[in-house]
Image (tube, rainbow, N blue to C red; front, side, top):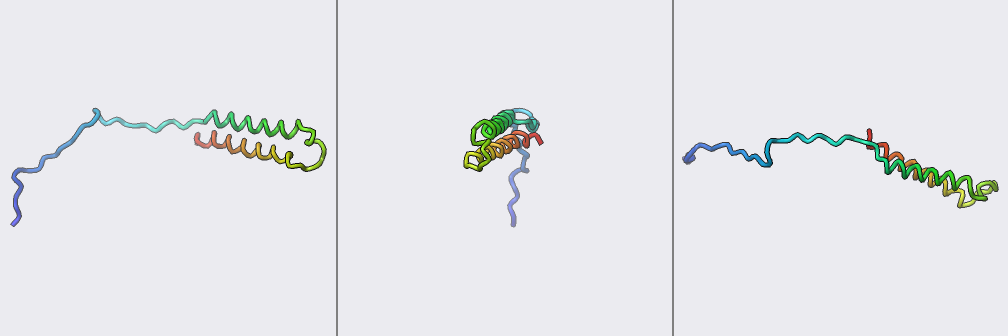
Length: 86
């Protein structure tokens, strides 16, 4: 009932681009750009925390909260620079 193939099937293989090359994963490294950005933001926070006259008047002003943002952003930027190394 079933028709037999005219000839036996052949295995066909294609070789594209030469022998199969092994791709090795890229080495993980620290991102220096993120670390520098984190250091600059942290330094800006220190400068904004110490230099203005409002830093020494013992009153909480909105300007006094800006260094906290710089510290937080600096820590996040430094973490983004270090985390890929793990």
